[in-house]
Length: 337
Image 1: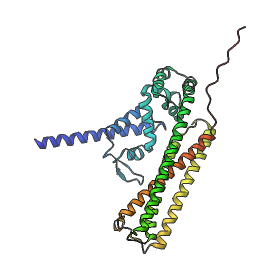
Image 2: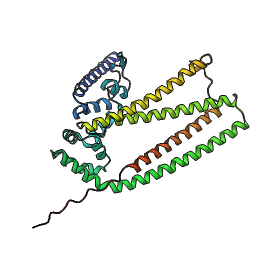
Image 3: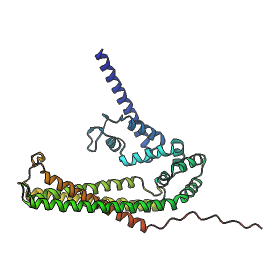
Image 4: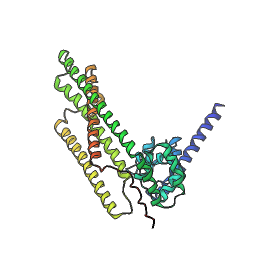
C-alpha cells in the first residue's frame, strides 16, 4: 500500500515538473518576440510562482552549464533572462488591473511609468477606470484619462507623502541617537571590562563586519536601481529617448564597474600583503564574544540608520529638484457667436 502511495507521489511530482518545463518553454517562446511580458506570459508566470513549479527545473547557467533552479529569482534570471524585480512588477500590474485592462494598456503602448502611476491610485479609482480603459482604442484618449484621474489625487497624495517623509526622518533620527547611545555604552563597558583581544583586533573585527554590511546594503540599492533600467520611463520608439537611455545605462555600468574594480584591488592587496596571515577557512575564526557581538549589532544598527538617513536626504533633494506637478488646466470655453 505504501509502495502505491510512493509511486503516486513520484508520478505527481514528475507530472508537475513536466508541466513546469512546458510553461517555461511557452514563456521563453513568447518572450523571444517581445521585450514586454504579455498578459498570456504573465498568467503562466503567475501560476509557476504561486505553485512554486520552478523548483527543480534545469536551465542554462551564466557559464553555459546546467543549473538546477531553487528559487523564483533563479527562474527569472536564468530561465527568462530578466530580473526578479521586473517580473514581480509585471505580475503586480496583472494583479492590479486584470488581464483584459492590462492587455488594452499594452496594446496602445502605455509604458511602465504610466502603469506605475495608475498603481498608486486608490483601489476604487483603479476599478473606476478599468472599464473605460478596456473600451478605449486610442492611446491619447487613455493618456488623457490617466492624467485626469491622477491630477485629482496629486494634492492629497503630496500632502500624505510630505507627512510620511517627515515621520521617516524623525524615526531615523531617533534610531540613530539610540544606536549612538548604545555604542558609547558599549565602549564604556569595554574599557571597564577588556575583552580577550587587544583593542586594535576588536576594532578591526567589529568595524569590518559593520562596513561589509553597509557595502552589501549599497549593492542591494544598486540592484533596485538596475530594475529601473529594465523598466525605463522613456518612449522606446523615440530616437532621443533611446540616446538618453544609453547615457543612463552607460553611467550605471561604469559606476558599478568602479566599485567592483576598487573592491578587487583591495582584495588583491590584502592577499599580497597579508596572504601568509590569512586563513581562507572562515570556520577557523573564533566566534564573537558576547561583548563583541553586542558591539557588532550596535554598530550595524547605527550604519543601517545612517544609510537610511542618507537615502532620505538623496530622495528629498531629487524631489525638490523636480518641477511641481499641477492639475490639468481647464479646457477653454468657446464663445458662442
